[in-house]
Each structure stands twice: as structure tokens, then as C-alpha cells.
Amino acid sequence: MMNKISLVALDLDRTTLDKAGSLSDNNRNALLDAMRRGVTVCIASGRCYDSLPACMTNVPGIQYAITGNGACLYRLTDGKRLKAFLIGEAATLDILQVAEIFEPQVPMTYEAFLDGKAYASRDYFEDPVRFGATEAAIPYIQATRRPVPDIRHFIMEHAGQLDSLDIVTGSEEKKKEIEAAIHSRTSEVYTTSSVHQLLEISDRHSGKGRALEALAQMLGIPRENTAAFGDADNDVQMLTWAGTGVAVANASPAALAVADFITKRHDEDGVAWALEKLLGK
Image (cartoon, rainbow, N blue to C red; front, side, top):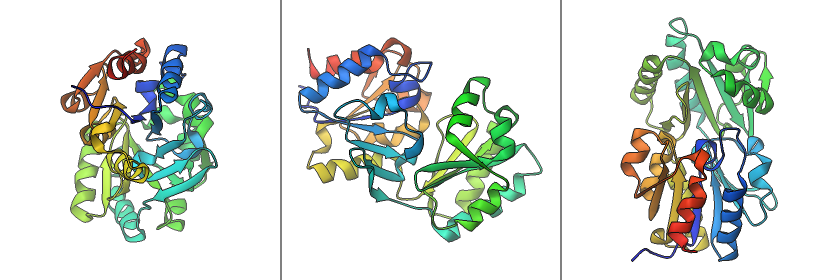
């Protein structure tokens, strides 16, 4: 018999949102119905707070948002940050020193997240494809990133204050090498990836799963009464921790491997379909 679901955590891109980055009517209605039944719904995204889409934050009843892959937990009703695991100053400088070794080898840049806002180099802002982003991602990047002249200087200037940071490169091989080199240099960070060009880095206490655990404890909801939806490697920790981990059919192999339940694709209202199965009609 399936446990009663009281808390649902939702990844956004390629999970809850469709190909256009919108919330379908079916998914929206399913969320509203779940909340009418007393289920707490929480956004759980790699995005920073400032770039959460209005189609989700404006849904009546959604009260919480995990951002930056678990670096921060916000209450949406008043925008208050309830928890934050900032990258330490020493770890930030370690990351930059390691990454600098690889900079001559491949087109590479950074994204920095500070106080819920996203910053990027002007070169990346103007030409994201050069650094591995897809053409389809250009509008999102340019709508959510604040360009700065020297992103490395910006990161160093705010070392110890950052929610999280990304290394951006189109080389999957180099991304893995950089990740391994960072972990050989410092044990103070958590690394993951939601799309191929990003190595996403936050404090070692981060991760969507850890943030979901913190929220569940705060609300007094047992682990077995939680469900989480995701599609990518940065969702694996959350899918593993939740009482019921749900992967959309278009999910990465790693996410599919740990899921307790596989639903329809993100562009086939997979969230709505799974909520009907989990909660009943």
C-alpha cells in the first residue's frame, strides 16, 4: 500500500514545465487539486530565486522554493530565505584556481549566484552558444543573467558570499576533468549537472535532497510521506531521499535508475499523470 503523500517537490525545467518553459493547464490543475487535498507543494530547482518563472511562483498555494540545487530554501509568500548554505571563501578560491588551469584548453566561463540573483560574463551573455549552450537556451540566459565585465573578478570579490556558481563549457570530457580536479582540491563543495554545458557547484551541505529533508523536518512531515519529481543528474539526490522518487520518461539514465516510479514525459503532462496515480482521483 502506498504511503500518503503530504509533501511534493518539483523540479522545473524538463520536468514540470513543457518545452516552451511553461506550465501546462493539466499540470497546473493537478497541483491545485493536490494542494486542495492538503499536500504541500515545493519548487525544487537549480535556478536561483530571481529566475524562478512566474508561471510557478504565481500558482496559488505554492509556499516554498528550493533554489540553487539546494543551496537555499525560500518561503514564497514573503520571499524570506529560510536556509542558505553559501560556498566558503577558501573553497571558492580553490575552484577558481583549479578552473584556471583548464581555461586555455577549452571555451569556458562562469555563472555566479549572489542573494538569489544570477551574474555572468558579458561574453557569455552576448553569445551563450560559444560556451556550449543551445540556441533554444539563449532567451532564458539573456532574460535571467546580469552581465558583468569580469566574472572571475566578481566571484573573487564576493568569495564567501555566493549561493552557488557554475562553470560553463561545451566539453563534456573537460567538465568531468574539472569536476574531478575540484574534488581532489577541496572536500567543501557539492557538484552536479542539470544540462550538458554546466558544472554546478555549491556548498557540500547542499543538494536538492538535503534541502527537501530540511523542509520536511521543518514541517514535521515524515520522509515516507514525501514525493519528488525530476529529470536530471542534479535531481538524483532528491529522488533518492524522497519516500517516492518520480522521474519523467525523458529523464537522464541516472535519474531513471534511482526512481521508484516513472511517469510520462515533461511535454506529456507527466507531473499531472503521476499525481493522479499517487494521490488517486
